[in-house]
Amino acid sequence: MNSSATPPQRTRVKICGLTREQDVDAAVDAGADAIGFVLYPQSPRAVTPQRAAQLARRLPPFVTPVLLFVNASATEVIAASAFVTGATVQFHGDESPEECWAASDKGRLPYLRAARIPLGEGAAQFDLVKYASLHSRARAILLDAHVEGYGGGGKSFNWSLLPTSVASHLVLSGGLTPANVTDGIVQVRPRCKTLAVDVSSGVEATGPDGLPLKGIKDAGKIQSFIAAVRAADAASTFCL
Image (cartoon, rainbow, N blue to C red; front, side):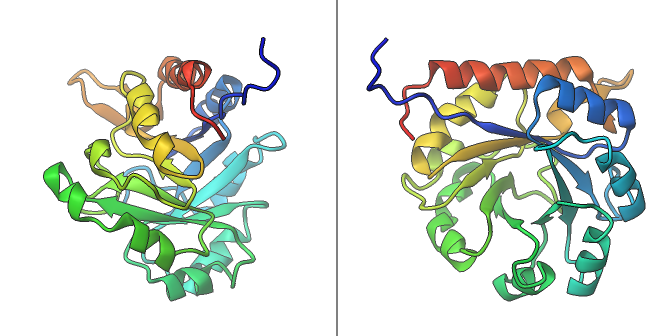
């Protein structure tokens, strides 16, 4: 082996929208780096801060709990985050850079800022470079599809239309599954500093109608998703 070769970058994985103990355990066992809890009451995957804290207590060291908020006040975010030790917060609504900074308790809470990328050809019109600059205090910019309401709705946007160079850490989300996450990593990783991926509906159990059971995860799908990410990393020729 060439000792001078740069090892492939490891893609971090967040499993989001968890509501049950067995799903938290399955995500941890599969190798997830972060576990997301939705604190947006209108979401079908919503949990209370107290429930998020109960679930987060199952996490071992170095697996990060992430609390997702949509247009919550700074007071609400700071109070809810106090229940979950070591939490990162994720702003997924219409929060301005100033509102994100205030709700992070002026940086005491590390945070992610979601960017809602239009579907179809509209993705080319979204100025991600400017958006990332405006939210430069965020730990990373999370890319999700812009659909009605908040959250990607299991839809993926056109990754190939993103800017070729974004001087930020990015988290790819929106419609990811074990079948397409490799392509997402291949297309998006060269465009940013580092890349992580975030999945919710793509690893959910399905009901008799074939639709996802929102908030109920499938352990096999979680394992398949993370295995696909690791395979993409192993085959990667990208440099750090």
